[in-house]
Length: 318
Image 1 (tube, helix red, strand yellow):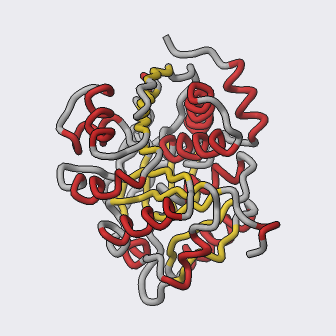
Image 2: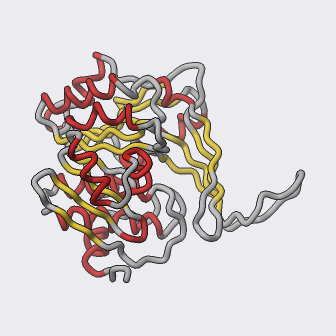
């Protein structure tokens, strides 16, 4: 990769094929059929969804992750390339399926899931990939908790190497539970922006509320903790003492799948454009809000300019 083609962001981690249907009121009994309005296939995951949205927001992106050698992999790689994403960091793992999820989106937005772990459990950033993976000024690691080979010490070494190269590091995880903290805590000194949901932060820290949760992770080395609060907005806490609580925008919610990934992408795009902290969070909120207006993790987002316009004109939730 030449300097001219160097990416703005390297997005590393969990890549999933999502199969989504809505609205699903019930699973039919036996072999019966129920009719629904919409079915979509999307590239998702805490890296896959993030890299697609970041590309739609105008960033040159490198995707670093794993797929299998099946038809699902063909779809994932084709979609990434259609969005102009560099897939030279993607690995095809023989003998395992591409990670995939079936999501039945209920009328109220709940989305019970059936997941095949697949290739992401076999992914690692080896020496031959490391320099390419860390070439971008912003390095995002997403999916800790479902990256069996990369979780733990390999992730710590990866983020440490990114910081040694002067990169800005962002981080998100998935399906956090009480046992997730030992995977995350050693990484925190090498994370500039840690962006879990409030539910994930509370279950890992044992604390309650944004301020106490943020303090828990700041005390353990994170540079900044940005908590997504669903309909309550987002909370930003920096080690320099800055605290911001930013309300959500008022949108007609169709599906919340991928809203966290979109928030990550919006935040990364805002960092790339050197927005101030409050505008950065508001822009990330707008990206998440757009995704909530449609089905799947890439819904709603059209461009950087459109997202910026929505951020400026949308009303905030009461």
